[in-house]
Length: 176
Image (cartoon, rainbow, N blue to C red):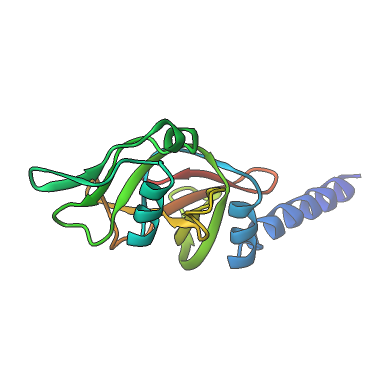
């Protein structure tokens, strides 16, 4: 009887450990892209063409200089697409225009750069170039999300995501 219980425990532990071991780039991509993810004040990069298209389609006003920054004020149409703050078209330290977003977005993995064990046994940390999909003609490609370095959003660092195993791997949070 005791040997059956021990055998059952060994099988259960094997299944659990097998589930933890199958974390790979394909699984990471599937988890990220499987359903919209709630973002709260993330910064996404725009191209010059996307900024111009946004002006032409009344998503934001034409860019205007305000001191050392050039910004474009959002319209309600842009807010309806979950853009959350005026577009920063030109600002010291940034190569590309960017805008803040807030809400649930479908994500698209552009590249998975690095995967490592997380701070707890059942976690993984993934550095990935990732973008949000916006259903509008001005944004035919996913808008890349900026990474964070020393508390500042930057184009030069990739976003970092934490995954947790709980009856399957799940995206837990953006690490900030």
